[in-house]
Image (cartoon, rainbow over all chains, first blue to last red; front, side, top):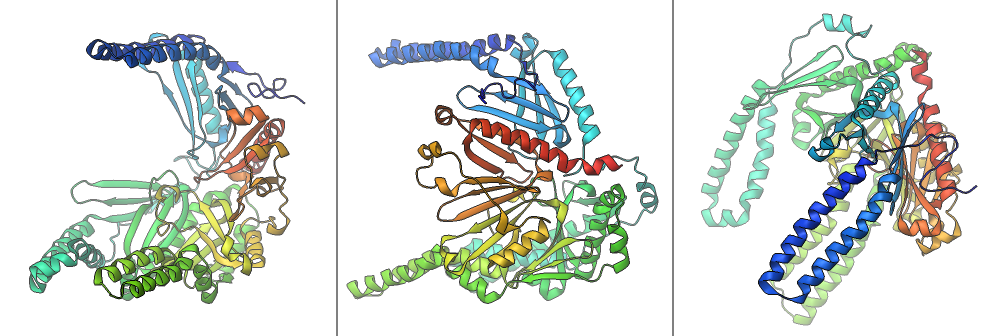
Length: 164
Length: 456
């Protein structure tokens, strides 16, 4: 049986991916930082004129270009699936992670949206359990989907909730 | 449907009887004050003493102590607690008033602590462990021992109410019939074993080496400098503090089962603690075989209870002992008691595949994971062998993580998270096996959870 680390149980689990708009958001964030960094390095270059500053700029820009390509794949690597009893979340390219969080263990649900996310109509849903280690975070959801997920999760959580 | 809100069929009769708000014991401010004297003296240090002279020093300490006592009296006046329905309400604070309602269904464990001064005055401190609390919620300091014990029984009875209502087995009736007086002793750790076990720690081994070093130094130099001796003694005291503290804390360790099938743990010499943990609140059990104890075949067991996680840090603060030291057979029967159906001797684990040797060059054979009908068993450590038992019913979530190196080798690590910090960890399994394990854990956790809600 061959298993792909990105999509476990492909035949039994229906994986949903996050909105591709998340790529744009991440790219904007990445390049804003790049611009700020490059600007800072340029100031250094103008003041001092050492060749190390140029090297720094080149490294920063190349890194950003490479990371931008990775972003495309990284966003596609995010995925979630709602099963009868639990929520599955997978993400990560370099370090691949899959979380299985039973609805019954859910303590509360967070829906957050930063200013940039809001501009693109995205939101992040995060599930919290009593264990600090469990991370079930799904970024890049359409608001409608985010609130649907939140409502569904809370409803299921209430249904199946129990003490620890 | 266990943790429900106000519309509980059982709630109204209790809520109707509103009992008065109660105060802590009148001696508590004095005890708090006495405690702070020690702190003040330590803070002022010997140096100050030599500078200002004994009389002035005593005066300063006395003034501070009186101030603390007065402040504590105000604190005592404003502190009160009452049980309302299935909540414990505590109000305290002199400047910032605080009212807390602690839902008792979230109660994990209750501990009765008696520091030295409290032992002399017949008082006790009641500490509640509540899930979600960053630290121990509501230490009620101090109550009389009888009052504290009664309150504890009452809180535990209220906390356990839903379970017994939810599953109308013959158990509650049984418990009611036998009256809550008889405890069944499970074990008692011999103090001699405890001392020996703490002598068999790296710190204790360090002592003769340190003494030899100091003596050697004196012989070589031929002079006994005061600074030399003092600093050596201080250093040694620091090193030895942990084993000594352990001995003092775990002194006279006794374990019992109360009629409602809860675990009663008592221990301590200077500060006695008696802790009651309902068995369904046990998140995990950890077993450790330290290297130096192997000759004796000893091990120690830890109990993971949610709520203690936040305290972290100081080993002294946590009360997570299940067995400070003991032989394998003792531990085996104990584990059988705490996690019914789990036999410590029959926990088979399988090691990760051979190619994981690249990631664990030395300790590959000591890593292992196994599934029994009740618990997930994980094992690791070459010199100090450790084992973690996590009951499926207590699993919070399951994670599969694959790092870049693991990906090259086709391996992955499975984590089984519990509400208590450390999670069961199946390291470096084959990828297909890891996913199968995760799926299996999810299924087993669900199956272990479901019987209870389905009845109500």
